[in-house]
Length: 199
Image (cartoon, rainbow, N blue to C red; front, side, top):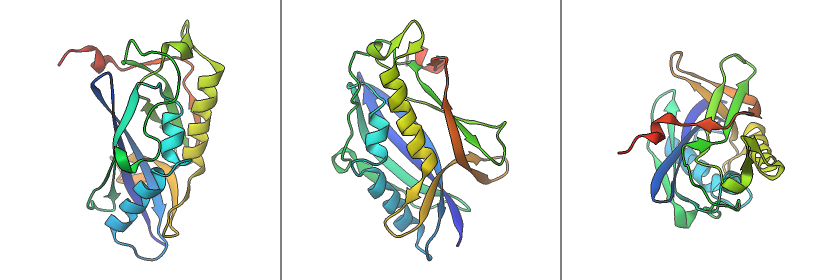
């Protein structure tokens, strides 16, 4: 079976500010589906309660709202984009309690592959609530939610058409994507410096 890499983009808003996370996943194709069919299967699965949408917002504060999912093939070539808007996503609001006063501060997921473990991937989640952090230390409740999300992404699964998916790190320099087989939560709270500048 052929393996293709897909880009999966989560867009959302918090306090009127646009936020976005980009993920990549390898798809071990069952049969020969066209790239739009596979992109649709990704969005359909991830928008289902208990799947990606639930794990993702389970680690985010209540003020966050998912506005869309986008999926498209990026390797070996590009493909058409499927878009799901918030009404198609079962769980689209953050579930953690507390307010957010600084959106540039966020938990960081560090993704590790077996092929090249020294070259990690990183995901800066959109934000963290004041209730979930104290003196630069995460609460146990937030760590549990982050671990649940990390375990979901590293475990992978099966799309509706039978193709297997696995979280991946895209290597643009070599036009390849390596499966993620482990993760850790950065012990230091991440800071997105570019979010400090007014637009």
